[in-house]
Length: 79
Image (cartoon, rainbow, N blue to C red):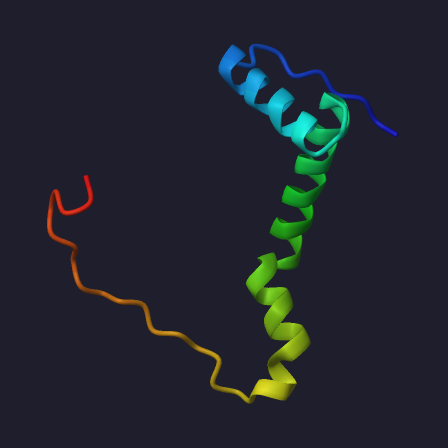
């Protein structure tokens, strides 16, 4: 297996990763490994939505498209 060193990681990111690892009951190294593996798999497989469509598409029919709301939100409405 390959090794990797990440330099100049901001302290805030390091702290967040450490907290996330603790909440998942993993070491920091195992947490980062998990994040990298999930990211690589998602980008190569087309993401979660693609996998859902592949798996359940035949059961749901061909029209799985969802139209997005194209209306503009009012500035400052959710600020």
